[in-house]
Each structure stands twice: as C-alpha cells, then as structure tokens.
Length: 427
Image 1 (cartoon, helix red, strand yellow):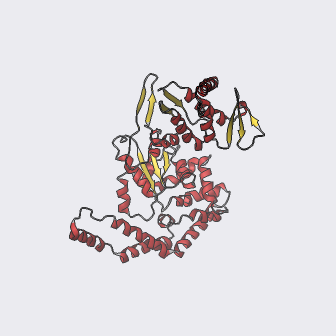
Image 2: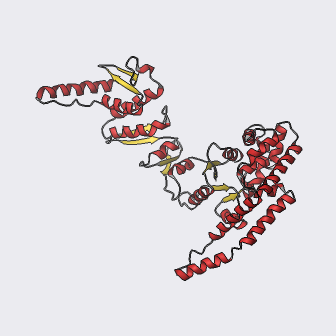
C-alpha cells in the first residue's frame, strides 16, 4: 500500500511540473493505483474503490451513502487488490511466480483477473503453480509443465504433451492421477457415474458423455507415445452391440457391461435383494414384482426393441465397409458385397427369438442384457415402495456406507470381462 501511494505522489508531482511548463491542457498521468482501481473494478463490477489523498475505501456501485474501509473487505476483495498491487510492484522484466493463483477467488474471476494483470505487466514472465486443472486448462496460450515429483533436491517434470483427439483440460486432469484411468459414459453428478466411482474406487473414473467419446479418449491415450505407460480403460453400455463388435473394442481396452445400459445395474437381482432387505421388506416378493414388471414392459414394446437392436447390427455391419476399395467399380462392388451379407429378415427373426426366449423362459438376466430403457430403474422404484427415481439414489447411498462392500460384490459380475480388475475387500 505504501508503495502504491508513493508512486501516486511521485506521478502527481511529475504531472504538476508538466502542467506548469505547458500552456496547453495535459491529460492526467496514470498511477499504479489507478491501474489497480481499473482492474479491481473490472473484476468486481458491483463494487468501486474510492481513492482519497492517503486513504482507500470501498462502496457498492451506485450507493454513495455507505463506504467501508479495507479492513471490512471480503477475503476475495482484499486478495484481488493485493495480487494486482504486488504484480505492479514487481521489478521490470522480472519473473512473477504465483503459488495457487486460485486461492480465495471465485472460478468465474480467476482467469479473467490474471489475464488483465498480465496485460498490466507485458514485460514480465508469469509462472503459475496450481493444483486446479480447470485453471491450468483455461490458460490456452500458456505452456503447461507437469511437476511429477520432488525428492527433496530435484524436481521430476516434463512438458504436458499434445495428444491428438484429447482435450487439453482432460489430459491435465489425467496427468495428476496416480490411479489407473477408466473412462465411462455419462456426466458428472449423475447416479450412474456416482455408482461407477463407488464400485471402481481404485480407479480415476472420468465421465465422457457418449460411448463414442469414451472410445475416442481411450484410443487417443493408448496410442500416444508419450503416455504409453499409463493404464487406461473404457467401460461402455452393452446397448445392442453384437459379439464381434464387443471383442473388437476389447482389443483397445474398452470393456462392455453385461447389461444393456448402466441404469440396468440398479435392477440386477442382487441389488434388488439388498435394497429390499435395507427397507425391511420381503426380498423374494419384491424381486418377483420387479421381474414381472420388466417382462411386461418388454412384451409391450417388443417390436420397438427388436427394430432398434437390428438397426444397431446393420449400422455395425456397414462400418465394416472396405475402405481400401478404389475406383467406381471397386467401391460399387465393395458396397454390393457388404449389403448382400445384410439379411434384415434373418437379423430381425434372430432378435425376436432372443427377446421371446427371455420372456417365455423368464430369463431375467437375459432380459437386462437385451432391454434398453433408461427410465427402467425409475419405473422399478415403486415395486420397492419407493417414489419414482429413488432406487438409484438409494443404491448410491448404500454403496457409500456400511453396505458398500456387499453392494460392490453384488455389482462386480455385471462388469463383464472388467470384473477381474475390480478389487473387493474380504471377497
């Protein structure tokens, strides 16, 4: 603060001398305190700094009746003022090192503030040391360095590599983890992602939205020469994939659930039984009620389910088009050969047989393997005396409390070939 006021006095004295020597109007000179005020108010547009001779006060913008002293500022207001002032006080052409630049700052102001401060000191090199991967990724133009470790005398570090097909923000998040990586479908905050994280608690679980994004992320990391040492996997819904596609994906470390969708995990027999016992109900009756409902639901939309499954098979077969074919004749022949192998009637009848077999033999596990309905767990809730949608919420709570190991043990078999990679205590 003393430095800023000293600069103000010096600049104002210089301005007075210039005015005395000139017959023309001279624009006031900008002090470092003026620069602090500008950036501070730009960052906090609802507040303004009131600069006095040797005092600084704050007020709500537009309210001239109430001002408060710096000691009454919030932590964020004080930190912003301090950071701007300290950077302005740095030596010319210096290196400014900022440890944890996000401290006491709301995420919405972190990057804009530092970019404005950098503009005030274009002569300086700014070095940020942070654990906040979002902050690091948001500085698009900056060079990123990963500090891998420190043995007490030397740092182990390397440049953050550029991995084709992988967003830098995601790459930075991955580099900071010492756990194996598992990409899954879904979004942060969803019950299915919460379930994945609880079951796969020895992994860094990263939701990637769609299955295609999971596949892209895993392939990008596994084919990266710089990151070949990382353990990276993907887990996706079975959906309507045929066995050939499932095995093909497995070659890239992408595993498929044993149920049609991750939401079906909430409805497997072992989970229904554990939930029913937790609610002090009759597990046998509840499981039977759930099974009856699922079989009725499949029967009521049989044609829709079969058609979607056949469409998925056709789509996979079309993806097998021979890309090496050349010329009009070559491409035409390759397409004709491919389409000649697609027998829609045969595919439809095969799927019809699968669904009918599940319903007629009351094969509940096969039904969960075939039936795609994202709302299934919500609809099943009422058969356990729960409100619509509460089943998934309860299962996630249970897997995080004393029932956790039992719930993980119940779910593990439904992770397909990835099951062997899931560690269960006392299993």
